[in-house]
Length: 275
Image (cartoon, rainbow, N blue to C red; front, top):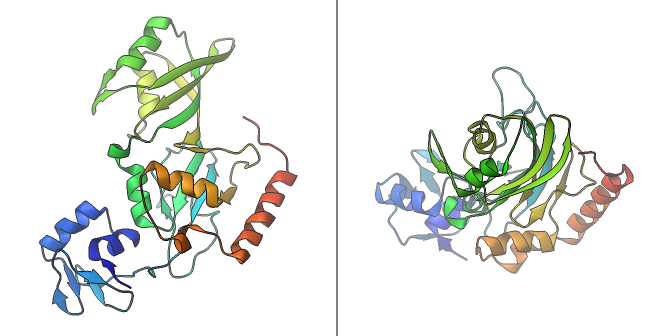
């Protein structure tokens, strides 16, 4: 069974299909010793070289996996940190012959829902602005917030990297000088939630992502814990980005289902996480 070269490389995490099509056109990719061209198809038995290095390709029927991780404060979204800080990859289950790819980032002070996948094309689509996947956050604000401020945040504010806005702002509980808000936005620029609020002269002193597209943070997944998405949740995620995959790639094997059931039982036995 063969697939288009750019699709195979995208699944292996080398970049988006569009980027890889350009790489192929630029002569940066070889297949079985020959410079590749657009339209080439490859199988797992073919030897693919990118920029002089042999590419590690995934099997055509490799099952797509997605983990939901509850990121604690103080962890960085990188595989290794020169300052020796803990990373979000430290607690994830080990993979053989493949790797976890983070779907976007959360800054060191932000907690909550972070997705990881073993499929590069899925990761690229989930992060691409064209799919307009909304992210929802629970945020605690220090300072006074009025209706005019909320209106500006919904209509758009000019930041250093362009106009940004929340697609929704819902006020919640207020305790003293701090107020809770639920906000949503359709992109994931660097520190965008914090910068939007700070543009209005207030301080964000707590920030937690609670939803990414159709995926919500379960109450039983505590900080520093993970759970793999089940078949239905994975199908919901694939539908949002209009990504069609083989049935074998999106269904848990019996042994995987048993491991998922055991993990779910362990997480639920510890009770719901606090806000």
